[in-house]
Length: 326
View 1 (tube, helix red, strand yellow):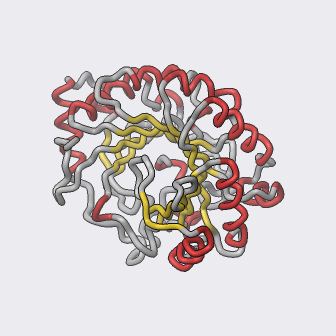
View 2 (cartoon, rainbow, N blue to C red):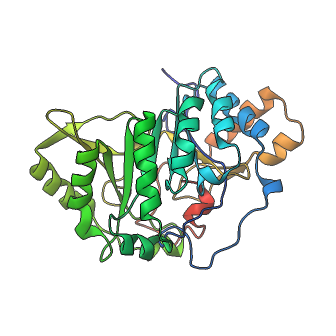
């Protein structure tokens, strides 16, 4: 499908990442400052009706892929109801969700029934003590339980997102790969990004040498895996196992960027590495027409920069990741 929504650099915008809450039950060191409690007020959150209007407007402009994110999206009350509403919108071809999986065991069946087809699960270590140190919560057992239930519910693929951090978990990459191979999960390794002080202090690891090591170890070749994101994948010859690499620092993907982010308060961020934004909530609450909303979205997309400046200006972004949307 060729989308009608293009930025000024000719990139088609066919993917919206939609934050439904800024709250999270974990406090991952690379995402949220210790002691952080500067959350938005629910009265400022987009309602389900407002979210549905925005998604419908994006579909009319040609966007077809949508991902529910947070914070932790499973903390939003009646999240499965929202998913079902969105899946009924004509033009929503792919609806997925990112989660830390602590609440997944009790939500998986309802999410699957609502039409969510794919899950991304954050899991940075298989060691309970390390998970405690990274997330500041004793969360590993509940995450693993959630994965078991989600797999039984029929989610496929389930992608495991591992943020690789120097001196923290880089020695666990092979163990995580073996775990994903055993359980039929897709592993995605992610470089830290300088989004806020939390991201800048997380311990960057260049994934290019690791990619070569894993390619050799598992006998992998370049391949494709379903999804709308920026990962570059290796797959085994039999197709049983895939590893994705999200490398905004060592090999950025700006020239093919197809996505924007909408925060729970209705702010469109056009790039993780740029402060350009567009406020939709005031327009929604002042009675804007559907045509006006589409026009506003087109205007917002024109603000999308050609590329991030994480290398050139690592201190540029002061907002934190949890407030931007996953």
